[in-house]
Image (cartoon, rainbow, N blue to C red):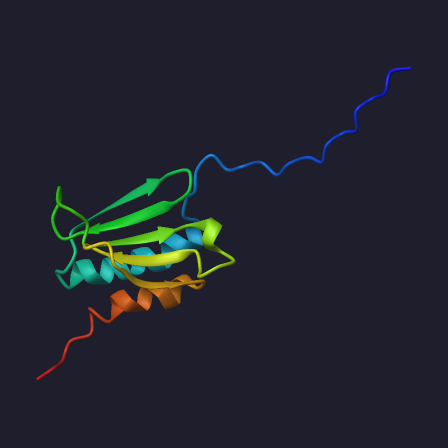
Length: 114
């Protein structure tokens, strides 16, 4: 008699790429618009890769990004899936809440008034 192999549990589909959701792009683009209006930033780029989604911020087109806002879902249960990374590769802020992580960039907008 032929034994039928057991049916394996269905695996959750692995996403082909990580992307920012509309609710995540809202706060990012709001901050970006304010910094453009202040004359600090001029261009941006979005990359959606297999393990990470990156929103790159540029002072001028065709140079290295000033900042990168990264979303890494694999780090969700560890130190947080959102990070702001500086031009030198240093992680400026990492966390679970995007708005909290973006505050490190909003501090650049605050200036002393004489």
